[in-house]
Image (cartoon, rainbow, N blue to C red; front, top):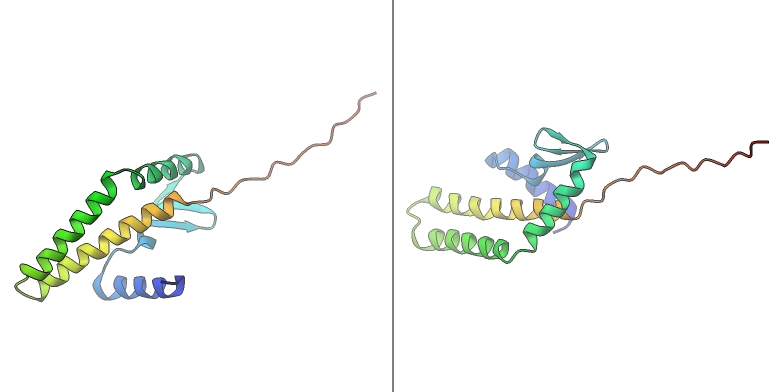
Length: 125
């Protein structure tokens, strides 16, 4: 899905269903990084990036994702008694996708570097 379609889908989900989107949780604004409303210091971003990579690279993470998704799908298919049951199961699948996308995005964050100005050596006589 391209970026424009993803943004449109997220806007529809947010406005129609009051759903949480990745942009609600992870934001870059004016060169600052936020998790929710908390401003994250540049010194912390690298640690969060590494933690996201660790989570994504564990054997447990894909196992958890798959099992929660499979359970939600089974409940949608076999245990739903009404539209609300189906809707809730699909919302679970959507939120799993949101969490996975946030971790993936965080693991790929490019930390801006401040260029260091080189000073010319002065010859003292």
